[in-house]
Length: 74
Image 1: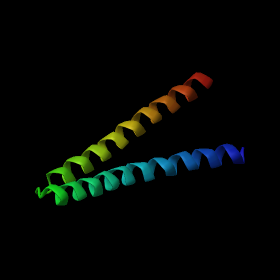
Image 2: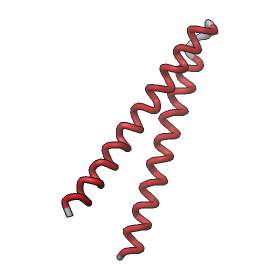
Image 3: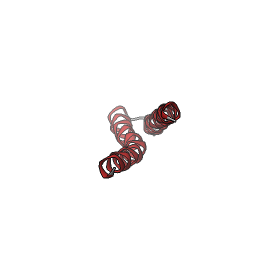
């Protein structure tokens, strides 16, 4: 039982890290590209938003999949 709880907590933590880090990493890439091409922060905002949105969609799909698994066991 303890191993199952540990795996559950690890999955929850990885989701939160994914949600934050994907946006931050893509925003940093956008910042680098903006500086390289001399643009205003168009790419920084666009890529940061894209990273956050992608991670959020991924979390929603994983949540739905997990709920379907639990419902099937019930």
